[in-house]
Amino acid sequence: MNEHYILVPKNLNLDQRLAKFPPSFEFNKEYIYYFISKLVEDIAYQNMDKTYDNCPDNNKNDMDFMIKHYTPMCANINQSFFRASKLHLDYLYLNLPNEGRFFWRNNYEEGKCFSYRLPEYYWGNGELELILLSGQSFVNKIKKENPPFVENKVRKKFGFTINYFDTKRFELDEKSALKDLYTEYQKTGNYQKYLLNAVRVMNLKNGHYTFHHNPETDGRLHTVLTQFPKICRKHLKYDNERLSEIDLSSSVPFILSYILYNYNTLQPTDLTTKINSKDLLYHYILVKNSVKPSDKEIQHFKDLILNNKLYNYFMNDFTKLPYFEENFQRQFNRAFDGDEDDLRKYSKKRFLSMLFAKPIAYKNEQTVFAKYFPTINNLLLRYKRKKFRDFKKSDWHKKLSYLTFQLESHFMVNIIAREINNVFKRKIPLFTLHDCIVVKKQHLDIVYKMIEDIFIREIGYAPNLTKEVWG
Image (cartoon, rainbow, N blue to C red):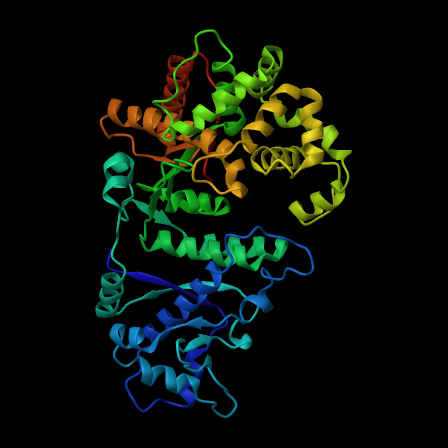
């Protein structure tokens, strides 16, 4: 694919400046568009690892706050990439009559590069657009600067699905995708999320496919598709056909219930070959033997999950907890109006947050869970408090998420996805989306049945599976 899209504010008006005050040199608009797109990307990625918070002191998601961020752009790097960059940037920094500066710039200091940002008036209402660069030599330069890279160990382990990431087979309606993202931003006010998702749309459109796998933490395969915004999936096609997903419902509780059930039987299946980090299981078994969780509780927990009633089970109790209204408002950006679907989503988020949080967090939700499942709650709390090899104390609680995610990845990627690929001899393209398998619409039913059969073969029963066509 010898084309490249860049992301810029829709309100940008470079042509007006060039027409009123023509530069004295041959001006390359595509370089400046690319430069601006890098500024947008940098803003999108700042603080992205922090949780969205609506409290008044935290304005990192506010557009007016975010666009004032200066991005370091070192002169020698700019020059090596585009020889005339200094001429272009100096011209755009000029304070011209009735035009002002096109860029704001913090000048060079010892140990610091020049840093740039766009003035507020070029951001307009914050909406972004993708622009296709047409200069082949410049596009080639961009591709040379950013070559695709996949670690050998990742390609060796997941090559069977990585090879389906083909720019000639993906088709994305990027304009509709960006429009949906902006509409969502107008409702939520979360500008960082809008920027970040717009960058992800650009990356997929450009065939900028990233693959990441850390076997010692979550064990999941992270790709451009796992990061792609859910709201935009309906605008994505593969081989000119809609994509669809088979989803493992309540995947984390399901995997957890399997671990609980398996190690409370007289002849448990050895899961050490299925977990990348053996210490995770060793510590779990030590804690389990000291706590001895109730068989009755485990069966009840498992039944709720298999009947798709787990999150509903806690809904009424969660509404009676302190700060329910405030927490609901924070999650949905509106007050609770009695909608049960919203309440189920709220219950799901609070339950999973409690499950993976530190033992000192979500105390109210823990009280609700302990009312119905006291021995399971005790087991999970002790497991999350147990000292764990090289982990600092503040990370001990992460053992539970790593344990469940690694086992989920074993089933969904190493067993199910690999077997589908082998059985159909690569005639069914497929992608993994953590607890989902994504295939073309025409293959949805046959893959659904196969996933069901594989789970029955592997663990003796099938989980709750759902099907959905993207768009």
